[in-house]
Amino acid sequence: MVANPRETDEPMAQRIGIFGGSFNPVHLGHLIMAECCLAQAQLDQILFVPAAIPPHKQHEQLAPCDVRLEMLRLAIGGHDHFSACGIECDRGGTSYTVDTVAALRQQAAEDEFWLILGPDALAGLPTWREPARLLTLTGILALERQGTDDLAAVLSAPALESLLTDKQRHQILADRVRVPAIDIRASQIRLAVAAGQSIRFRTPRAVERLIESRQLYRD
Image (cartoon, rainbow, N blue to C red; front, side, top):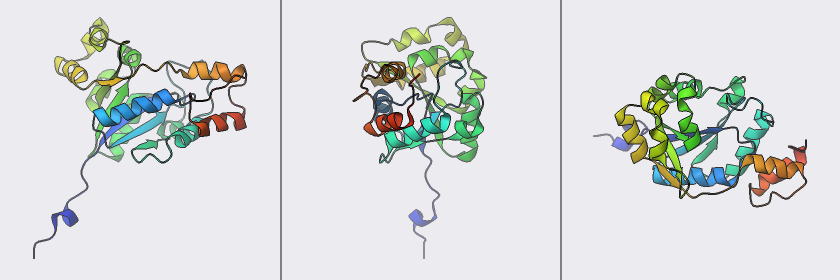
């Protein structure tokens, strides 16, 4: 008797998006961008990874990493394809993406990873730790805001041209994720909280309540 292939085959590899950042706090713009990536890039899962200490934002007023992770879990609760990952919170110290992606690949070597980057992050990629090694570990999903960004112009910068191969540049352009231009920024939310102003409809209500209950961003 021939065994049912469904019973013997190993689980299929997944396409996983890595959405890193300070998420200080997470807001609706983050969630909309992630949903666009999920649909347009046909991802199976998106991991939201808050940085313990972002290398390029070392002087930013950061809520504790475990609190930002809690805010993410509240924001994405109930979404079957979104999850919050505390790998950088657990590691502590300055968070380097190359270390995070390498660790995730060790945990799930059969899966395919895609790093989600906005245009500013993509432009700064040559200044990151071990960018050439990072590009061997993950593909890049670049975000392009409608009417705001020109991804081809970003990729033509000399530093990126030196870092990327022609194949990589073509892949980034071909797989770009087009997102609406939503003018919500975490810095604006923090300033509004400090000034005692409403942040309603800029971040999920559960996140707003946590900010209120923990008295975050008051100073």
